[in-house]
Image (cartoon, rainbow, N blue to C red):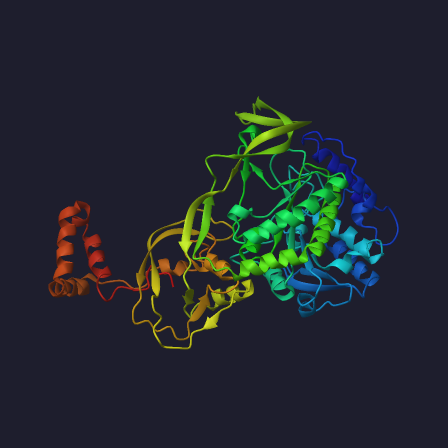
Length: 587
């Protein structure tokens, strides 16, 4: 208890640098209890503390013990540091098996907390809601939906706990760290699947087939009035536009009304173009598949990213999350069929072209926005203009917002990709994503088969998420007399064909190629000897007059080449049958 009091007193001092608060007295405070069965650590602390890993597991066990006929806890993965990642399954009829849940007539909601362990609002909100279910206060919830709940995804980062992990966040008193024990950001891992944590999430989704996926975060950035912001890829940029439209039409009105009724201010998931001049406008972000909501959008899994406002007090944020989740459950129960129809439509659609990379539009749209007054001042510390938020309301009638509407890269969707048998890890990852993969058994040549050759490439100078990513330009050429027996075939004419294209097309920024899965193709492992190449090349040019003319022309037109003996020999070697035909070829 003494340690807890010390933490609470520390929280006062570490908040003193933050902007002043607007007063808040939401109706949702009535959800709190101060005593009685299953009162949470969050409630006992007055809304300031979130329990550590050990106490979190203990509370999960107490929930299950209080309601064993409707709650069950499973371990979905183990972190690299050896901690269990738990999944609590809640079902009215005691159907806990993944197959039973996936075939249930009731929709299933998956709520995920702590992918960034300092952003832990979802854990304490769901503990309160599950407590209310267990004690009968919200017995109606499980008559509407089945619940899957991950209390802490980033369990190792959760235990790297400190009052000083997030400089722009009000509580909890001690909070976890953003990345896991290997310093990897789990919400950048949805394509490459390097972490056991995200692999556990994908395995859970594949087995349980939830109808709605909610990933709870706390945002960075500017000050504004909204305490609960949330979003999903907008219709214009979504690869599942019918799903985004269903979320707009059937979910957003229910959630927003529920939040407003309880004294919270729901807002759009946006960021700021210039953090030192708010009036320049907002950035309308479109998530790519490395993120949970971008990945969900690609596979037609309705996915909502919640970003509570970091400057609002922890108690307010947790209560807002509770209300948000109840609103999402009500909307899912009421509009299950409309959402299912949208998902079915999107899974049946096979595009001929995909946008894989976007940039911000030069011309903005506008929106009404509930901001906070600020002033700009010359900082003696930074030597530049900085911003100070004043804690007073500022309404914008038409604030500019720049959406990522500009198409930067698009690719043609092939009918299928073929993967050599030497890449079983790629096949394993595709299957974990839920992509259907077949083994090629015929020796019959594949018509119109093409191979991508790297024309130029550049590696990142520093690692990102543990990888040296690579950017490249490609040319494509037809492969004749191919025999792909024992290779793997990934058809794009399947429900997850769009996701497969993002993962396997080398021009996609979140592809396995871009993440460095095929970096060995940049290695040369066989080399020439000049004493052998010179006589062979002389005969090769004699036998191929067109090649000899090309060589002579390059000598005449390129003086640098003509004076570089090694470049001349390299040119001849590359055109000889001894040159490595797999070098710079995408497998």
